[in-house]
Image (cartoon, rainbow, N blue to C red; front, side):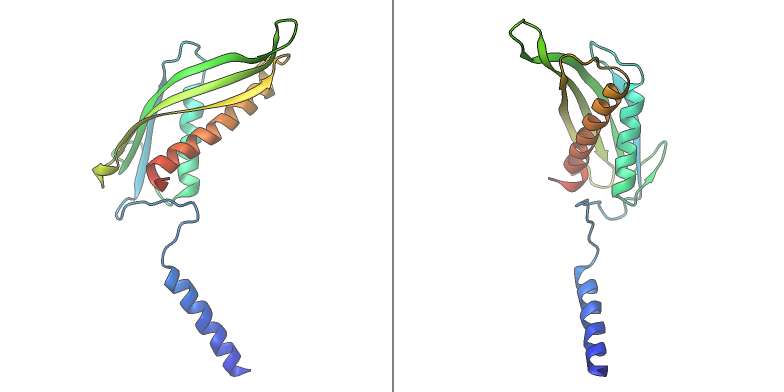
Length: 168
């Protein structure tokens, strides 16, 4: 019985120490990196949705905060995210026999500039885009708009995180 306990402790100890530091999010943060900042994302789309740039900035900050142990700072961050919202577009995707939209699509595109002050080879300047489909009979207001923005922001921020820190 004593031997079994000893083997169990030995097994657990070697298992966890052999894994080293592993991030379940897949983040690959360079050594010595402790802070990040997210600058304002200017809304340069033709169709301007009030508050969209603020909501996107907060969504990106929250995702990085939740998936890393980095600290959010206002300036002089080791990692810096900035850019602009380049497109906010609603377009019909399918039509009915009466020539009305059976389904609409909201598309949001952002251009991101990422600067890694600890490892400049990781700097990035890339565009990201995602969409949300909703019934043509529905208005993009209230809860429908909130759900659309939340789903698009979730995908956009995860894609940005993967491109900048997870290297996927």
